[in-house]
Amino acid sequence: MFHVERCMKTHNKHITLKDYSVSGETFSLLKDPSLDLLYTHPKPSDEELKAFYPKEGYISHSNQLKTLFDFLYHAVRYFSLRRKVRLVKPFKTKAATLLDIGAGTGYFIRAAKKSGWNVNGIEPNSVAREIANMKESNTVNCEKSLSSLEDASYDVITLWHVLEHLPNIEEDLKTFKRLLKPNGRIIVAVPNFKSFDALYFKSFWAAYDVPRHLWHFSKESIPKIFSKVQMKLEKTYPMRMDAYYVSMLSNKQKTGSIRFLSSLLTGFRSNLKASKSGEYSSLIYVLKNTY
Image: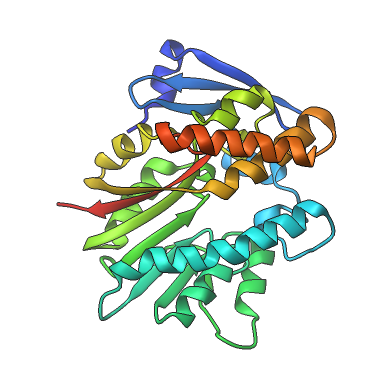
């Protein structure tokens, strides 16, 4: 599908970036013009990738409330959970089966279960998975891998800021396709490297997050990629809050401070420009299975 190893010599360097979170190492983003896709180079092996994830505190797996970032993340998550549940509601069938890939500590799958979905979650991180499964009420089933799941069994598969992390994305998309019902949907949320805040912060844009983010998508790349597994883009939704949060993280990387007011202004400008261009900081894509 991507053939990045084969085509690497013909792909131009887009930008050079630093891993601010863990290693301090430098990576490049190369551009595949045919897909309007950026990808991280060199790509760590599956085993090497583990070392680039903090053992504690990776925000999407965190229940801690130690910093302003934590409070902001959890506040935004509270409101975004309600929105996500509303977004998947139109695709609920009588069976109402939903699979969340990269379920983290299980907040979304618990919220979906409360609204009537039969849910499964996949979370490779053992600490996050244990937290997801140990809740005393509203018990959910969060597993390590997809291996035990049946073909054509899900109405909806969700990946909330997960697709960019998948090292074996070609095989994973084929697997998601196999697990989805004939008229099912995949819902994907990913950062958009063509947003105003990405162009403004350049190499300091926090949503690049190399090398944990291996793939970097545009509005054009998502339908092209999913068309290769016979899936069609139905709808795109903005994630407006991401512009503010990512701007704070980006300023932190650039200046050592979140520069709260400056970040709010940059986020506002990003959303204002995106209201005309559609190039929001992050976007949600609804893709329908076709045969």
